[in-house]
Picture 1 (cartoon, rainbow, N blue to C red):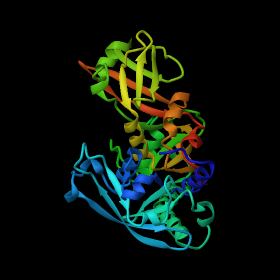
Picture 2 (cartoon, helix red, strand yellow):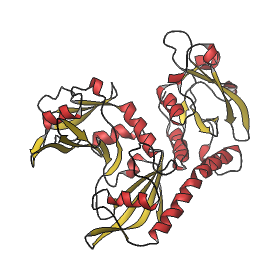
Picture 3 (cartoon, one colour):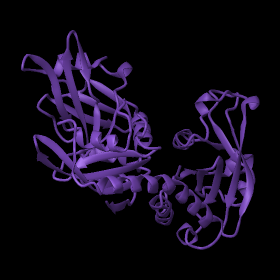
Picture 4 (cartoon, one colour):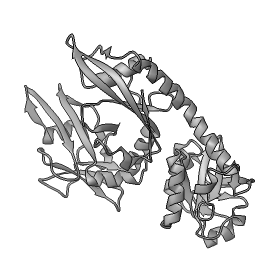
Length: 388
């Protein structure tokens, strides 16, 4: 896909700032003539992550073609269309898509925006539609954006109400005295069971509570490396190679950054061509100790933080316990996935290992990818802040 113009970028940001998730696709001259477009990897990821369609589960050939209701939105009205999603029998069955009547509303190399909402695909010409104006003018585009936003806000408003009732209690004692106490207490107050689920905490909204007096990094998500393409095939092997002995136990508790080597001689490096994030050793910089696929990290980021409440809490110590008062919420939506590699390279996102020997094996909490405090605006569109 070609680069966006300054105006197209401005229009796209207008939608993102309202929490609307948009995928882009570019019809070519040949595509418009033959009524066919390649479903690029980012577009396929969008369809899969929104539960609209998963090409990886679709067979090849016309008998496996899927059709979806779609609409083409202009300044004045929404036109009925139909999306055809299929994989041809030729070659490896590269995924294809087409929207009926699309050629009536765009020229070759226009950028077409696609929104998935209530089981349908909504299409508009980002190059030619004045998105910034029409989100505020009565008409089909404003109706779509308002409905999309309202649908998401119902759950957020429900959760915000519960958090304000919790905050009204003032300082609440925690049953545990640990770094995780601020989050565990909040989950207990919301009657959310403690579990190891990778899914967001509250009806699709992830909760991240943190202490107000700290400038600690914010925990984004945990993701194990791709062991198949890594030199070390387990946390135990990594621990054996780079760990240290403390209090009779072998550990590897460390932060790894792309900016410099840590005390264990480990560093991150992003390979743009291969789409791999590599953790390597200062001793042999060419060796890939551990490897993550950027596609997988982007998927985890979107899965975990499609919508998040970052909740600030004040803490005091009383009767040898931690007491928390929840103060405010920063509400983010739809991380900017293209920023992930930028923030890894800049050191704003780092990796934490928490590996400890246990008998003949090892246990690891993570590895955790964490965001530098104050860097939320670099990863997410403009957010909403609420006082509790």
